[in-house]
Amino acid sequence: MKRSQVNAIMRENLAFIEKMGFRLPPFAFYTREKWKTLGHEYDEIRRHMLGWDITDYGHGDFERIGLFLFTLRNGSVSEPDCKKTYAEKLLISDEDQYSPMHFHHLKMEDIINRGGGNLVVEVYNSTEDDGLADTDVTVTTDGVKRIVPAGTKLVLSPGESITLPPRQYHAFWAERGTGKVLIGEVSMVNDDNADNRFYEPQGRFPTIEEDEEPLYPLCFEYPEAE
Image 1 (spheres, rainbow, N blue to C red):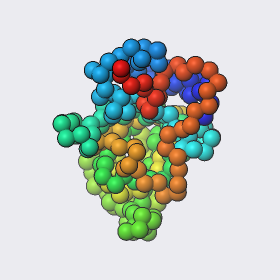
Image 2: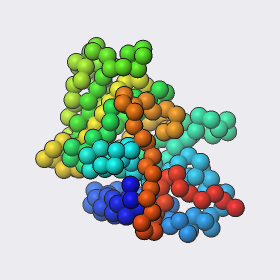
Image 3: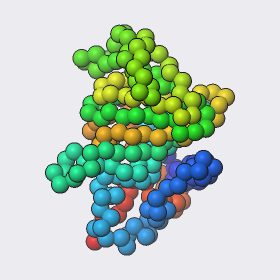
């Protein structure tokens, strides 16, 4: 992805977030130059990869296969002194913008439609060898357990949510004709470097082609504290 595209995505979705009445924490608006001045008291943000996360999954076609994310809080499974056992993200999906089929080895999460259009979530069980199972899928939507056929596409309107347990495959996108969706994710600790299993191989973090200065650094771009 070009940096100019990343910056444009940030600006567009900041306007959408503001329109939806959501507010990001102060560090969301720290520039790369400001990050160079910040000490070790900000290391939780650095280590746990809080902040901006924009991905095209390595396809180079963000409008078709991509996702906007902002990690608001996150713990760690590898730091013995870390007591935070949960994570929270803000996501934005546009109409027909596909977030590819995947599961998490350890993480259970709730995906919540916070507003905007309708969110479509496609679900499968996984097989022992990490394939897509053809068995019925048990899902929980807003505390109500349901059993649906493999490959069911559940449509969540604003305010509705789904709970996704570990190893349950899911893909999602905003339903065509309803507009982009503001999505909340509340989960166990998030580890995007080790806990994701994509059904088809995907990139997770983009390679950035620098064609202009960054508006704000992405969550894997923070300079270390001196």
